[in-house]
Length: 360
Image 1 (cartoon, helix red, strand yellow):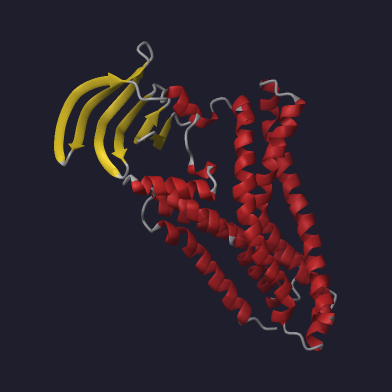
Image 2 (cartoon, rainbow, N blue to C red):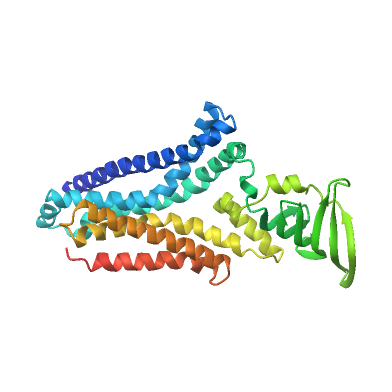
């Protein structure tokens, strides 16, 4: 009974710090963003209701972004205060090990992993899609700052359209492929090195075309210098407004999309990296809590500033390495799973090793 009361006390202490720090982070993020965007709101005549909705839709993303660092700092503060008040010493004197004392917060970390995953994929993704409607008003050209986009995919009835490079400035594209299927069998493939939109004819003009057909086990090949035709439901406006970005898809949408790409024999590496990132980043919660405990019990007499400083260094390194792993995965240097999860495995191993070998 006493142990249950102790667990409740530690969890209550931890969650109180968590709520305070999360509120602080979200407030800082919001204030900085308002300062950055206030001139854009005024310039584009965005009314107060739209501004409110913009930050309401942004709030889940701020919460998701701040979660790992909040958990880390909350753990450090919770244990540091318990140390300062000699409560850890009293608990150990009553026969409890540091591992038993830490167990309720570690369990919270596991729970937060699941909360983070479902929160990101069910709420953050949808809220960011809603926010983009307002964002287009204050940043009408934000999607096209670089004037180019790579790796565009569309599933059209029984066909699959792939565009390797698209230029928004003149509505042209390079390396286009249209593959048509009957079930899982490829029946035709249309490849072109270049295409450009003809506004007068409302059609696409293709250059250097190669056409392959498979009819009853017979293969037919032909080539054309140029040709033009319409692609059903695809025009520059659709590409600009309805482009698929892996960061804007939830885990289950990515999984389904990867299956379609894989089934059609198309490259799905970038989408696979982002799918594993969805799960890998969610597990950062337990990693940060383990490091928070380690930072607290390694040097129990250290002041709060030292603990906070080390916490910020660890979270910075984690963000840096996992984003680097994402880039490595995009470039096929490592398999998608390993590119993301290797960072988690390394941090989890180091944190667990330090925790087990801590002087308690």
